[in-house]
Length: 486
Image (cartoon, rainbow, N blue to C red; front, side, top):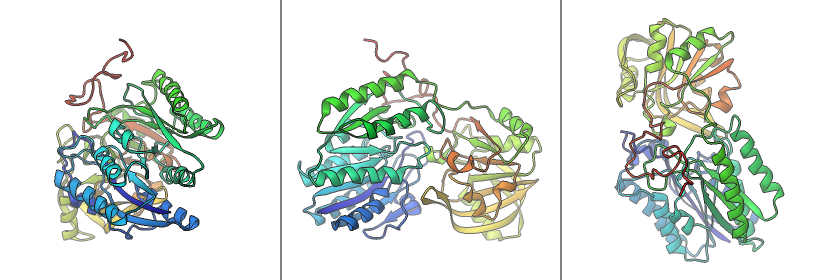
């Protein structure tokens, strides 16, 4: 067998002011054929797992380019077309192939393209013809469009949020592909539209139980090959935004459609109960000060670079400063200019510095302090499951009993190693202020005395009922109370 694999991925917050060009991909991951490292990024596990599978099977794996940019705003049209056409050209050169196995995200939006992944998959299908297997792994925070479903034989999404299972789901993707290529099964995909948009953390009930049910059904239901929930991405203003269920069966579309609908209606019945309770910045700081044991983690859930925001909001930090709270470590505040100033000053320097709150309104005020530059690290990175996430050149500054990590490449707070990468022991601090909606939970819950979810400012469109969508359908919950009404 001869199989082509590649990856092209990012998550687009269409409300974000941060435009994306090729430099954003190069800052996160841009690997030409054969250059992808041994460890995967969030959406490139099909490449690294493919190496293992093809070596085991004695098959030829042809690698195309792998590109990943940290979430932000619209991608420049020329950048998307360049990266897309680069992979299509590599696929053309690799022909003939027996299968195409891709790593995608699913929430990419580019200038002039509401559905870049659908466009890409359709071009792949046209190139290889109707008989070649085409499949892809997706992030669940994506848009499942009819064009994508029509172009792919099957799609598999991560089940967990936080996405600790992206390698495991890539193994599922490849396992189905291998059996299909050997003629043992014929994957057929069925989709159900849940007519809703919500946030579904799997670290708590009821989503924890729902996902466990999917795992069980995959093991016990005859003919079921894969079950995925496409959560949807509420910050993507596109026509087919929303939550959907994918059922992949062994040549039984009717079985898949019935099961997808059953699961989708069950999910809809629990709407509005999934997200953990959030407090504002004043309540968050007060609760942290009352906590009997540290470190207390305050998660700034909506200034999350993983959702396309800048990650430079200062609302919670401003409240901590106003209250005179000390023994605090903040990771991170995105401010490339402040980082440059710190690097120019050098370690040990004491300088006046303005940082943060430069990207958008409703993100707080810039912080003006005389700070000490404690440590400088080039190309810093933190762990994320089996992978590493870069956060660029970084500076540890301190003032008034508060430590802040400034970073030059936007990245959410995946893991406590973001602090230790700069020489800060996260376990020794009373309060850790981080920026993430839920990806932080798996790692930070292991060291936290308490976790507080804080909704501060308005850097992210987190209220779909009132978000000023221009393209997204308004016939789903919570835009309407009963989307099933005729």
